[in-house]
Image 1 (cartoon, rainbow, N blue to C red):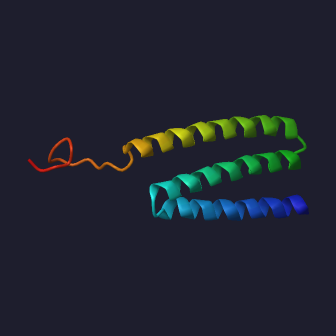
Image 2 (image 1 turned 120 degrees about the horizontal axis):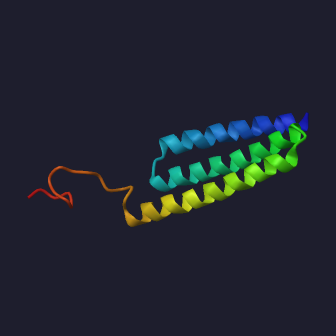
Image 3 (image 1 turned 180 degrees about the vertical axis):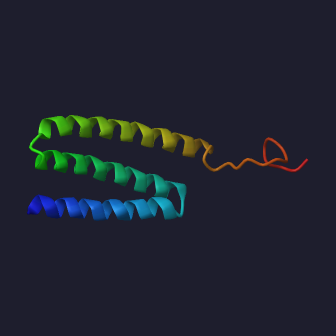
Amino acid sequence: MIIGLAIVALLVTMGLALIRAIQGPTVYDRILAANTFNTKTVLMIAALGFVAQEAEDYLDIALAYAIIGFISTLAVLRSAESGVLRQSKSPEGSNGEAE
């Protein structure tokens, strides 16, 4: 019963994080929401492993997912910091100014 409530609560918070990731308003809000979604996914995998009575196998998958999520969050933050995510392609010139 309690694990069922935990799974429902995780699904609700995952939905809210997904909404925040889509709406923004800034790149950092989206990154934070995606990181929250990754964390909730790891918790969901662990909870499902508990329900399936195969916690060891599911926890290995959850840990691998957590590592991949952490590395991808760092990569996206690094590209956001360098300005790659904020630049837009413009046909005028390489730096966006009209010639």
